Length: 604
Image (cartoon, rainbow, N blue to C red; front, top):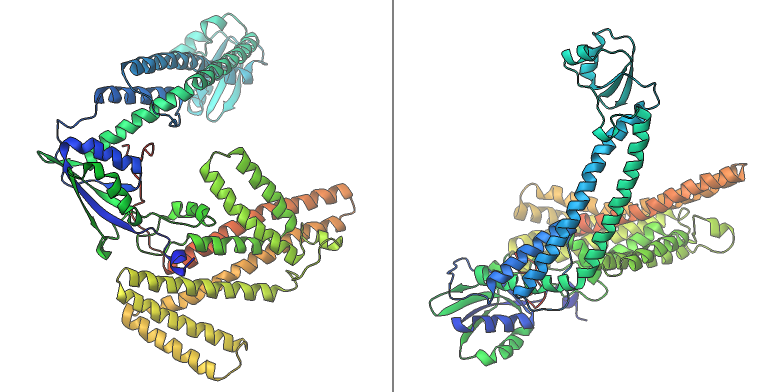
């Protein structure tokens, strides 16, 4: 595939505007919807036409309210896969579902109310039922406790219930005094008031168990009821929301004059002819205009990525940071190119990688229908493949355990070759930061910001000089001429960034060098991971007790396993988002939302 595909993986769009005969509005709108290739935009000036409406609009509105009430009671349902007719009979069915839902939830709430009340009594009784039966029980807070002590009632026991609450068990008949001083007596519900505290505690305990069983039964009834209505209700929801979307388009996205309607939006550039052909039956009833978006409109143009199959799951990362601005570089391919190898280089252990792979595959299978889980597990499968590769390269499985057993042999010993690991990390930093700056230049030229593009070019010259001078001082390059070339590049870079970006710019040049050195964290995590895993093996061999040795080793290996997953994820992604994206990434405001059947992208 050409380089342009990998760099600008954002589909080119065309702006369109349709002016058509008002009587053909819904026919043309439905044709556009069937195609599913257009993103619609709201009109700033809207004229509502009262004679343009959706058939059975009031029925759909009532159905939507009923769906909302039902889901509020028994939980949300996904939209279905089949369109069904919505009519008065549907409303009766939804009202029946709502009434049944209300009855079930009413029973559940009644049980919960009883449970909450009894749990309060149970909590108190559990602390005092073992004491001798008192004449009076008071429940007070700490402040009131001091007031009680002033009454000099000696034949009493104070029990801390928790927090600021206390129970006072009084073994004297002092009710009149207690009431006079404003204290309230602790009384059980009428059905338990004739029982002793111990008997009440036992009865309430048993009743709580019975109520919990009833609660479980009602929960099962609700689940069964949801299961019974699931398919039909989901299909009704899809059909109602589909019409709600049409109504939203009618009220917010379309505008009307006395005889015409107006609709505008964006369409995938190579789908232009497809739209024109689909609208041919109405060619005498509408006019359509297409325009290329100007650079000044890029902020308003929605973004539609055209990622390759391998990099597609990495779009999930962009969900957190925003999609790239139209016309700029999409970084998803480079996330696939860099993050998994970095993760693998940092983890680099066959044993841990295989265990993680089992866990990842388990979650992938467990949530097989969840697209987010599918994409995230795909990212980690790529990363763990690299971790296996580096694990064999380092000859490590659970530290050096398999090496010592003679099963694995290192090609590069991680701890003995720390200088090589650090060197590779810095080289990766040079490659990715320089690549990011080049992408920044390309982005700015694409956005017609030549001044910023020039600044980025001078920054590239300056950082190239810094890299070159580093290679000279490390004696990787031993030709004296390159020292003068490096100094010249640094001087040109500093002067250039000063002129194009002001006095703060040279500091940013130094900061860029720091961003390159930041990639040394790959080596730091890789070495720390190896040392931590091996410490478990060392302690096992040092401890005389086999059982104690296994426990110590397990603690270290569990810690190494957890950190082996968390650290490479955080540090690997940080290098992409902070050090790489910072050089070029520009986010847009909109994502391309196709107006299509069942898409429900325009439901308010």
